[in-house]
Length: 308
Image (cartoon, one colour):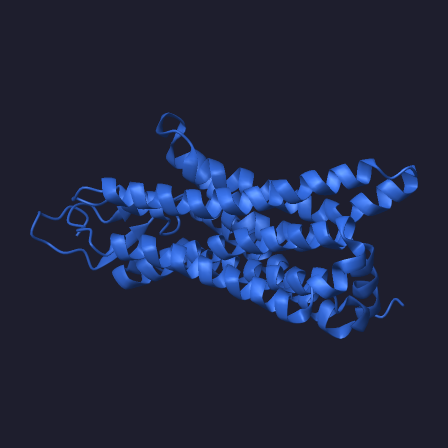
C-alpha cells in the first residue's frame, strides 16, 4: 500500500511517529497527554469562570469564552489522534484525513477573525469609551463571532474542495503527525499548482485582512494611550490589551512560519516543531496567558476554587 502504482486509489494514509523507540514513545505520550489535559482544563476553566461571574458579562469576555472554545477544538482535532498513533495505529482513513484538514482550516480561519474582533473591541473601549455600550452591544458581538465562523467555513471549504480534485496514487505516508495541507499536498500525483494558488489567495485574504484590522486597531490604541498624561493610567489602560497582544503574536508568528516560509527552510523536523507550537502548545498557553495577565480572570478562578 505504501508504494502503489498509478491506477491504485489510496483509501488511507499513514501518519508519522516521532520515534520508533518504545521508551521515547511512552515519554512523548505522557507529555502530549499532559499538554492536552492542561489545555482542556485551562480553557474549560476560562469558560466556566466567564459563565459563572456576572461582572464578566462583557464583550471582552464574551470573545474570550469563544476563543477558549476554539482552542479546545484546535487541540482536539489533532492531539487525540496523535496519542493513538503512538501505540495503537498510525493509519487514518482518506475521509478522516480530509475532515481533519478541513477542521484545521476552519478553526484557524475563525480564530484569526475572532482575534481581530477582540482587537476591535479593545479599540472601541479605549478610543471611544463613551460609545462603547452602544457599539459593542450583544447583537453586534454575536454578529462578529458569527462572521468569524462564516469566513472560517468559507476558507476551509475553498481549500478542501480543491483537494478533493487531486489524485493520490503513490506513497500514502504523510511525513507529519496530522493531515495538514502542506504535508498532504506533496503526496498528490497530479498537479497541485492550483491548490497552492487557492491557498495563497484565501490565506492572504484571511490572514492579511484580519491582521490589518488588528494592526490598525492597535495603532489607534497606542496613539490614544500615549496621549494619557498619567503613567499609571497608561499602564492600566495598556494592561487590558497585553494578554490579547501576546496571543496574537504567538498565533500569527507560528502560523506564518508553518504555511508561508520558503521551501528552502522546510524540513520534517522544523515543520513538526512549528506545527506542535501552532496547533497544540498555543491552545494550552492562551488560557495561562489570560489567567496570569487579566486580574478579573484570576479573581474569578480563585472564587471558583473557593479561595474568595
